Image (tube, rainbow, N blue to C red; front, side, top):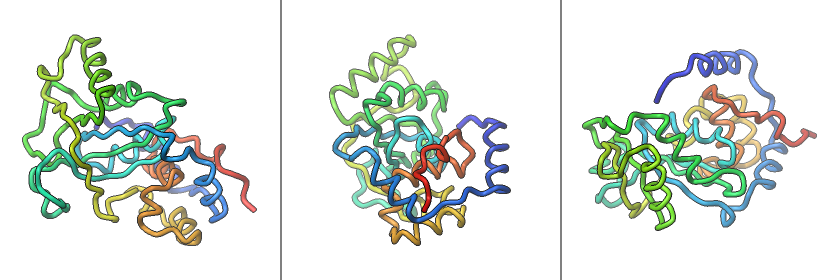
Length: 221
């Protein structure tokens, strides 16, 4: 992923001046979020999944994110027994606020599709889930004079996504105890945190990405 000095500065500022968050705001933000059956899903890998989980969580229109493993044949992979799978991120987005093409723009802006790392775990991969996604991928690449077969980024059909272990989910957020404490107070378990729309945004916020989360938060009691 390409580094941005502004991201590092925002991250430092947010560490020095942490956001105040209450359990009421956690519950209310998530209650208002777009329902899962009203979202679409994109799955892709661009290196270690911690970074893109945070980056895409901050993206406008993305509702939920989760880190995981896909692209291989091993059943029930784990971080220490990954087999031929790749670290990937799955994002649920609101199609009324963003599109699959918008997600692809971010994915391909974050890496060079003409280069590929040898280690399967960290390879660049786009995993299509439907015929419509395949069509969008082909059109997107064609607009850049590229084809799926002519680039080093793997473009494949998604067969199955395996969520990664809990400690990999919302990794940047988990290091911000002042924010995680509000989720604990709200009674959120590990799966709740992984699937929380607010956690997705705050994970991006904690990593220093543009996430205008303060204005979107409900008023605290």
